[in-house]
Length: 530
Image (cartoon, rainbow, N blue to C red; front, side):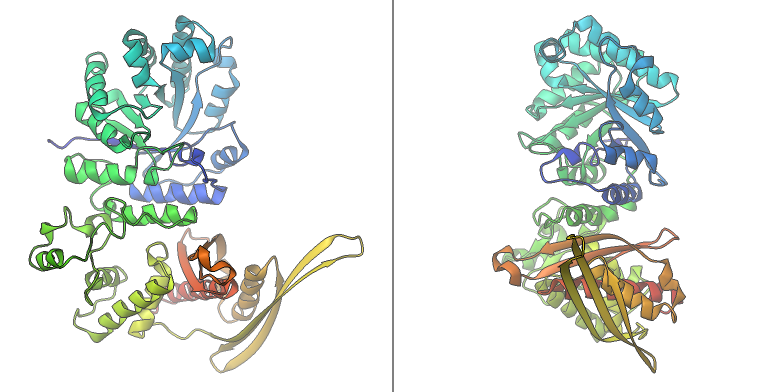
């Protein structure tokens, strides 16, 4: 198929947030938006202004995006109100978003049963709402809710809804399989009929996965002519989820020959973006996920391993490096070596593949992964592991001992007071010292005590803020003795962000190791010592 441009619209922060067990904080939303921007998606739907405080806060202080456009989601004006006097539309415009997506009914049955209005009023609501957005010089999108169900029962009305939005100036008319019940041949046929009335360059597709066909339906729609695809990272969303952009994007680029805002150069971030979301949701990445799963390019069977040694295309449909993944030979001592060399190169480390330290690093990674480390989302800890194995990390400081004491008591007013105190004994060069600090919990107290002792020697450590903290139990059957993984995200005033991790059966010890890595990484980057 000839190369063509497909526009990627991500709705993880809005539609994905409606999934069971998903509750994004403001910090989560900002970080996810930055990840998507780095990946190169065209539009990021940030949420529904006016619907909840977290979405309002997100739009009040939006992330600085380099390539993506921020979109706000809402609905058409209410019946009985003018577009100029509708609080929902006003909130969308006040959000400051350059792109605004509104949803409206296109299934005649729902117009009557849910809204209780006439078909003519529904068409006016769509047209007037879009025109109002366009009048304020914003890009307007119309999400045609229940479009495929509506088209099957009353194609004339469903098309009339699209035409009302199109004639009012909508840039995109998005055909929504809201119930997720359509199949690929239905989608391709109906899109083909719609394109007879509205050009595909103005059509998008939004699928849900209730039949397991959200990705297939999205690709069928593209094949039929739509040029925008909506979906979420890892397919998170209500019920069975949304169309999975982590699968769709490489399908479009590598299999169908289309171009997107996600270039082949940026596609290498795909695995990291996928795993990063799972870490934020405190869940294990799907090992069998297409393209990005740890098993996607894992080989164990003797026949497969033998074939891979001669020709990797025998059992791999693409080079895993294209999507930032890696090949794993499960019974081979060479598993991961090429991937480690590739990552070392990215760190600016040139080393011969036969250098014994490379094999030592591969073995160290294997041993750490058995213990529960997962370096995909903690690049800073991996770089430190690599440089320590190669002997290139300076000894900035040494913690010879630490202690954490927690106290819970009642004060004179009968109120419960929680106090945590951390004591850290540090060695910096020939100097030794002890610092004590109180904090809001053990991690905060340790962080304060560490920096209190280090900042007089390393002023740059004043410029660190802990922006995220995740705890994951790796073996829930072990109860309170389970191995715990802690991941910390740190930021500085220059906009740099890095993640570090620690693993231990002791939660505080795991957090402590992650803190040490965070501070050491900052010192290493600022000193320029590699």
